[in-house]
Image 1 (cartoon, rainbow over the protein chains, first blue to last red):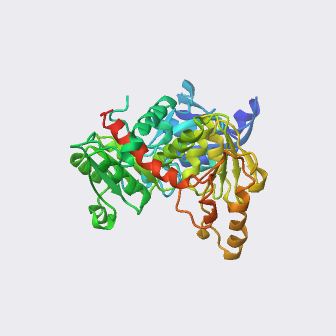
Image 2: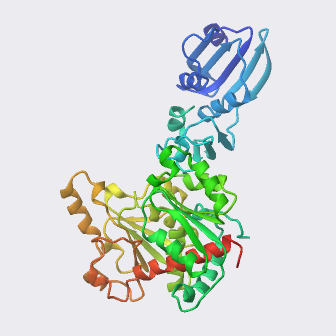
Image 3: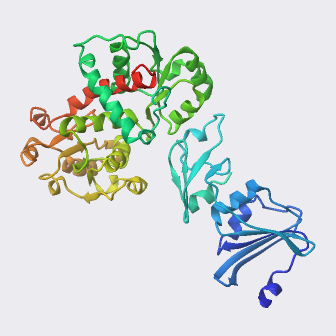
Length: 154
Length: 304
């Protein structure tokens, strides 16, 4: 633990997303729409030793997540925890949860699905399995796994 | 329980509901044949929306409605509709919904029938959405088997041909597995049943390379067309397609009671000499499309 503190500095205010599956940190950033300069410090640690093997960690300073964004993380990091940090202290900690219904977050990967047309509907999926994550399009029935989901985050 | 119900996927129906459809369909048979007259749907209007060509399905829905004294409006050429002007499907559906009592939709894009059902107040029946669902075909297929054997449970049912792109076999395989059939699959390596369909089946199907492996003990052969377009190399097609043909010689090895089904149109996959054998059921199966669709229309309109 001591060593880890040295590697990834504590932050004053913001969020820490912990227990991201190894190698998925960059995808978490993609889902959160963090690319280029977002005006706050982002720290990313990959392949960090933890009690249960290896994990990735993302720290974002001066930024909070709304529930919709947290759901998005759950789709690729079902065991992630989100810690809200204020003045160096964890003031809130929650485990993300894969929602039963995924609405408006992921686009259907099936190019021939009606939801990919100019129609007044939001893409919607049912969660078929939480681990590994598999979601099924409410409209065309196409099932999407973890990789497909990452590629089709809106 | 049926009034106002949308029939988008076969999984929208419970086993009891399916049995109810069959029960009504049986009563409809003499009317479908023209032996009895009916005015059950007099005063009702069906909107038949065919966004892609289809002869069999469209005509059997029309026949079903006319046989029950109802009226049909619709189109078969979407280029003549406002969709070609850029109208959304959602808007077209809301408009048509106001002109009719029940909507039947065939559309090239998957999920379009589910969308239509969401926007229409009146019941929507899916007549095929792209490579997706085609529940009325599935129902008439199962009905054909039930009419023949009285049940589905315990039957050995072999699906032959293009199991990858063949739309009718996907929902059929899933439904039959839930009804207790033992499913066997015979297809070329490149046209195998997709994994996600097998995952949805209640029991694991048995996979075979050759029809000969199952010829002697299958109760039902459900044959589908292998399309030339699926093969980049025509010689490969010739080589492959030939091994999935049901011929008069093969029929001789079948069980006495075995039946051969096909969603039609057929090209070469069942030779014409099979038509005259006691095993051929594909034309009977096509006829059942009418009473099944009559039953569905009457049920969702709440008149039976």
